[in-house]
Image 1 (cartoon, rainbow, N blue to C red):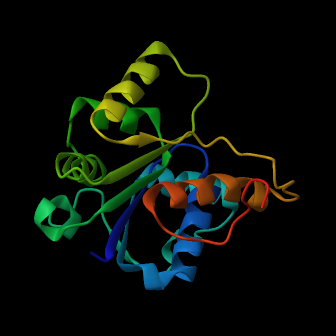
Image 2: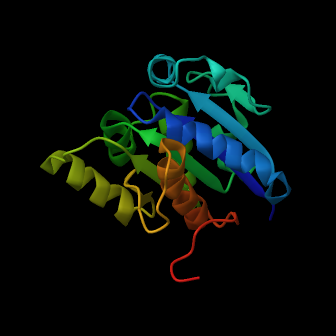
Length: 186
């Protein structure tokens, strides 16, 4: 099956991760047939604050409103096989963990989990309280992957983009998308 990917961008800090993820996926467009984005209003504000622009709407992908339950990935029959929530707020994590499908982000995550497909939540908040940890456990037990936005430094990144790319490259590895990246001891 060719990859059909939905990216959800929530209002947690870390817009750079979403930006780099979109850019890297567009560079490997032969590895997917659909790339769709749903973004919360808070995510748009955080993007403007952190990145100083409104470039979130400049990518050649399909965008869906967070209340558009007619989006194809709101149903398992559309066969989207990858969903990445980046960055993932603790509120979104909690709603996904409890099965509350009150917007397109949480509905799509519910669909991906019920269909036993790949869901990666790039959680950004820190520190975690016990509720966060239990919600992460619940999502993990349901088949999702929690990938904290914790960069690595093996590659000696020199810019903030290079630091953030260590997380994005790891996320792409987790969903089976091949990108050129630093590999330990290679």
